[in-house]
Image (cartoon, rainbow, N blue to C red; front, side, top):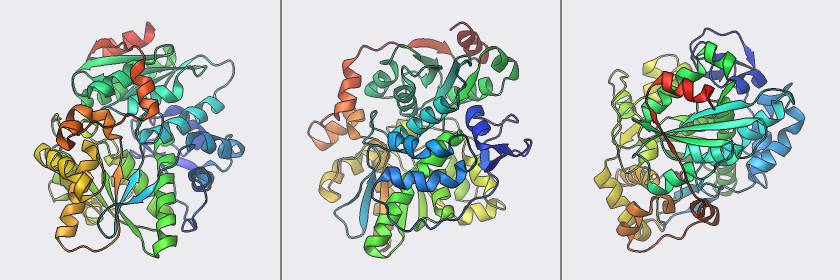
Length: 429
């Protein structure tokens, strides 16, 4: 399967080459030249089996083709349960059962395994440069920690992630370093993209990406949507509609891809926080990057969502794109109200990001929508205990893997939001 750049300046590229590159040479994002349509309505026993079946067309003729089942068995070793909520037709898709208690664990583990399998034995170490608004960095760190042939440079906005998130970024050591960037997530993302597109730098320091710009993140994330939709359709005979909390649009693009491939998914709604670049666009305004605002749902504090390029590529024009989606903004006051009421109303304790999706679900029900909906729970609430626990009135138990992370010492290094400073840091590692 070949892949193209969203910016049109790259020849069709085989998947192995696109995975290793991360970002296309013209600065665009890799997208499939065509999307295969499969029979994805038949449920499989495990998430790993669903992942292998979903990803198989992408890896036909790849060096990874025969290794795909083993890669999926490792990356999808923990399930993504679709659970009923209190309301009729209400569900939650729990994606936080991995080693860093966030949805990004699945794809980060797949990407690490894939890049490890593609690496030539005598090749110099590759430095994975990853910008994070809170959860990506920890998932990538866990996936690549002590993996031979790789180093990880995590860029995160200082003071804009929760204390437990920060600890989860800084507690790895060995081949992983965390850098506290003096700026916003968009600054971190800009630095990562500039480094990855700097041809001269990449000749001196082999670089790779693990952000949602990478195909190795986009493609495997579609698997849990296929798995949930197939199980729901087999049980109820209806399509599952989704409310996806989103900042950089990677997880939402994976749902779009799953639906295009044949998963029995219905409508997709995008839940955003006060960073309203997407809600403004889908309401009819021109696409315009907004300055990032700090919110309770900090992993979604993105003013320039990278994966918007992919959504635009997959639609004929902006009118067609707007016709396919609804995006709503949820402010901090509403997030607090939703978290406080969720145990009684929905039967769960949500993280702030999941709360944005619950807010949209409540709007749908109040408007009379009776279809089956699932909110996507992207992170465990224990990662945000300073926000969640005062609102629900009790402590939230730590998942064992997160407790292990917090028990380790942590260390991060300051970094100005300057590309020359990052380049010097990467060359001096």
